[in-house]
Each structure stands twice: as structure tokens, then as C-alpha cells.
Image (cartoon, rainbow, N blue to C red; front, side):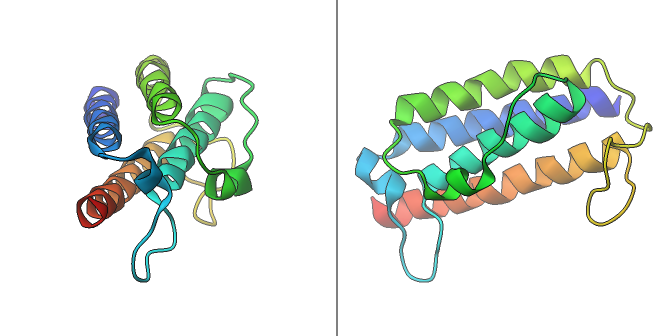
Length: 144
């Protein structure tokens, strides 16, 4: 039950992130910030792609993905279509992975400083995605 519910939340929020990226009138604005906001929408989306490919893909699904977390925040001018493609690929990865794991099994390494279950980690990552989705929405609205 938790597997299907979480997979639905991920798909919903990834699709919302895709819609936000598509709604930017100018791709230049994907790489801008305002006020005290430090990370542009493009980098937040790259962070979601990298983080989920690593924590769900490499760690749980054994995809072999190698993460470069620093690059998620420093790489610029990635075309919106490339970001969207990475987000779209996550939907299938997450659906397949969540259908094949036990939520009560311990995640392969400590998370938030201690041993946690897959269910805990996947719930926390869904909340993290939603947090960054809100940031992207805010940036799009104030920059357009």
C-alpha cells in the first residue's frame, strides 16, 4: 500500500516539476535567482534528478548511476528539454523500484544520521522533492 501511494506522490510531483520548467517563459530564467534565494530553478531540478537517481536508482535499483552532487548546484545553461527528460526518466525508475522493494527493510546506509527503513527514506525524499517543487514554483512566478 505504501509503495503505491508513494509512487503516486512521486509521479504527481515530478510531473508538476516538469510543468513548472515548461512554464518558464525564458530558459535564461531557469538559471536566475532573486533576493536571498541561492539556488536557481534549473539547479534545483538537476538536484532532484541527481539525488533520486542516486538514492533510488543506484542505491535501491542498482542502476550504477554515479552522482556528482556539487555539479547539481554549479552546472548552468542545461537546456530545459534535457532537464525534463531527466525528470521523465525518474518516473519509470521510481515506479519500477517501488514495486520491487520492502518498505520495512533497512535502507542500505544510514540516512539522517541513523539506520532507517526504505519507507522512511522514500517518504523523506518525496517530501524533499515537494519542498524543491515549491521553490521552483516561487522562482518561476517572481522571475516571469
